[in-house]
Image (cartoon, rainbow, N blue to C red; front, side, top):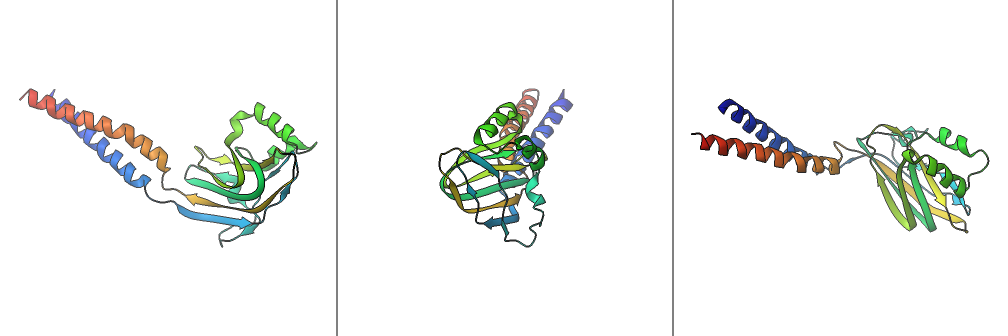
Length: 202
């Protein structure tokens, strides 16, 4: 009995220490790995385009832009846009060629929405940017990534500026904090239970 209580106390202490370490790690800021910016395209009414950065600003930007087509859980993608209207933005968990093969008859918004309704499992991010804004995405697994800009309006939308950053993460901050929220109380309960029970049997 006493040995089991000691073991429970040690496990509790380890869990609390691990949880506190996760909290500390979660506050370490991400490191910028790649960045890009440029002037975006015109997106005609009721159509969509794939997002392709146009002007590298860091030396480790790859000419084939492969860093934007594959993401892993240790990376955070941030995309910023400035435009003269409202744009729907999607990040799909598929490679660009496979995605575009479904739109040989045209890249209309209605065709895109129909495709997404039958492939909801591919949607990693869905958001809307009006005039100016940013979106962020951290995958939960290694994925192929395709970013789509869709113009559902009846007017052509000009993308005045587009840019973004790939950040390297030691560990996704929100996930680390959520895990710590569960681990620390469990460790605390085990430690208190062990100490209180041992005092009772003294």
